[in-house]
Image (cartoon, rainbow, N blue to C red; front, side):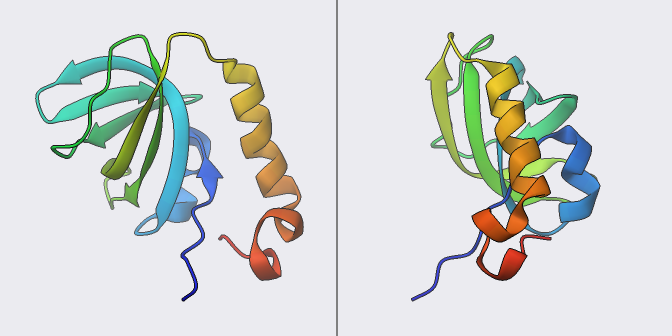
Amino acid sequence: MATEATPRINAHYLEQFTNQTVRVVGKVLALHGETATLDASGSINIHLNRESHLTVNHAAEIIGKVQPDLSIRVLQATDFGGNLDYAAANAVVDATHRYKEIFYEGGGGE
């Protein structure tokens, strides 16, 4: 069974991936009940699920579906703790979009 590609994105790429499943790494800025705000080279509103256990000021990886309002509905959330190199995470995002043929079957992902 083939798995769905989950392109790595940040806030700059949200519009290109509406209604698609993506991966985002960023800093949790705020938690508001069932939503969170993530800084991933820009602010992203995140709709959490019951299994999401995030901490403010920690890094997190969100796998989720980009909604029409450019928020993300979480499928899986992972807390990466308080020590992450955000510049390196953004460099990975840039590389995956610059060299799609290396990271995605058939150069897809968009």
